[in-house]
Length: 301
Image 1 (cartoon, rainbow, N blue to C red):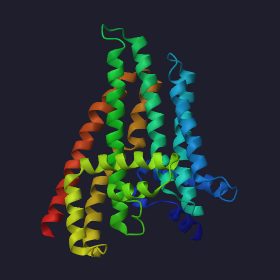
Image 2 (cartoon, rainbow, N blue to C red):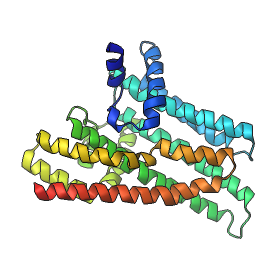
Image 3 (cartoon, helix red, strand yellow):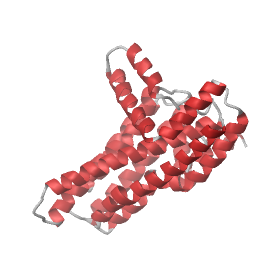
Image 4 (cartoon, rainbow, N blue to C red):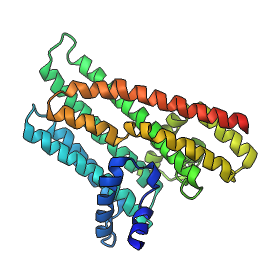
């Protein structure tokens, strides 16, 4: 029982984890986090390592198709995602948490995929010669990177918001851009300040995508301050859980399934269709459903 409680304590919340995370990534991440818990290795060090490991996948996939390179890239990408689990679980087990660490954690995956998009575009440029080369592939990379960024931003926002619905303690990471800007102004010049500045822009992107959510939060704050009634929290939590299965398609696991098929069978173009078309449609569906829920709650309060 104690072991199970320790495992659950290493997670943000079990109900925000998708199936593959629950059965593979999180249990394995927990074992690694427990193994290095007293070694002095920090969560940020694990995050930085994950960036290099994930970037290696893009390097292997840059070369012309070779099954050995394809499999090696898959192993590196899976390993990077395991490390991405380890850093957060290690932070919760050791209590070593920081705003910069959370920002770095979110940035890591964006770096992996940017390099992967560049590698894929280069490969497609070699495979398919068109009159628009290489500009068409540059546009594909930009469209993929922008799609990924907005999808990841919204997914992270909704999952962090769900923690806020569970409890104020769980939802500490849910912040608005004004608070982040206030913290930024008080920071001394350095890397942390630059990272916080980028995070404020990222948060504004999340807020821009969710106008009804912002209106609901403003209304609840005006009426209840920091003490939103448990009944409202429970209602929002229940409705948020209903959206989680489709929201999970915009996570790493939702991308990686199609990504790994594309790599193994050398049909890279199919991944760009998945990213730019399918996942954007899913994002729109999730956002509309969530915004509708927020508008209903705002009207009732």
